[in-house]
Amino acid sequence: MIIMKKDATVEEIKNVIEEIKKHGLRADVSRGEFRTVIGLVGDESKISFAHLAVLPGVKEARAVETPYKLISREYSELFVNKDESRIVQVGDIKIGGDEPVFIAGPCAVEGKQQLFRIAEEVKAAGAHILRGGVFKPRSSVHSFQGLGSLGDAEARQALSWLQEAGHKFGMPVMTEVRGEMQADLIAEYADILQIGARNMYDQDLLGRVARKGKPVLLKRHFGASIEELLSFSEYIVAEGNKDVILCERGIVPVGKGNSYTRYTLDLAAVPVVQRESYLPIMVDPSHAAGRRDLIFDMSCAAIAVGASGLMIEVHYNPSEAMVDAQQMITPDELKEIIDTCKKISKMVTRHRKRVRVS
Ligand code: PEP
Ligand code: MN
Image (tube, rainbow, N blue to C red; front, side, top):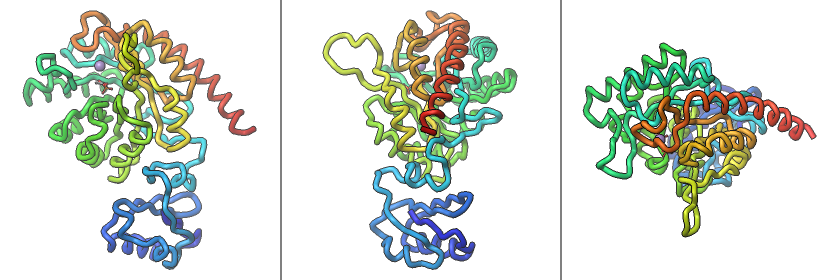
């Protein structure tokens, strides 16, 4: 990273950026209140920090030690308070502030009536953002793959229902981009582009989705370390798109016997990510637990450790959901979770502020 002097001129900043480009790298420019910081994007071995450090207007040029750099606290501490997350704004909704944000909706969009009824009921329960899968990642080719997989017309239809439901009930909408081919189409309709756990490692998909310029929710792969989650999120940020929301959704359980849960919710990932990066992190208790009787407990715990919000799968008739029926909860249950989590959030936010001061 290159820290410019407080009185560095526009010309001096431009000159540093040109120098970086000359060596085949890209520049990530962050203008803080007092000074400009420039991050390198690309193969650092092509350029010498000693050379950059003596350019006019440069205060300091040094390597960031973590494998992820642009999203690290070390790089961002000059423009983001060390206790704060980046605020990702979607319409009127702010993800990463003091108030938790709730994303809810069906696992899969099954039809217009189903989606509109769920949208209305999750909104009434207090949800801020509507989710619904149109292209579903499934383990078996013989399972329902989402309406989007039936053809172009069906995909557009399902996506337009999602967009309409969002408008009608006043919620931004989010859906998964399962493959690069879907990025342009989905970006026409969705406000947040979701990268599913299975695709966290697909750097071409991450780049393609990032360039749509919309907020991206990146789910942690179930076999990924926290370091990998952070490193892969940088493929999005390196495209100049800093509106990234991370999502912990459970990792592969250990041991031979029945693990009793679909995945193991790694709650420590929340405060760890907050210490390492300024990107906000949410929690998906639905896919982590995989059973509806645990969603309330896991939701409370996630908010207690400081998650910026939750993503929860909801259906008015859980057992009839076409995908993930066993983890679906009702809108009434969602309301109970949201009401309780708001209280927990107030308590822990106050506690955190006290801890920060002392
Ligand atoms: C989803 O949120 O719809 C989903 C498929 O989750 P994950 O990618 O975490 O399995
Ligand atoms: Mn699901």
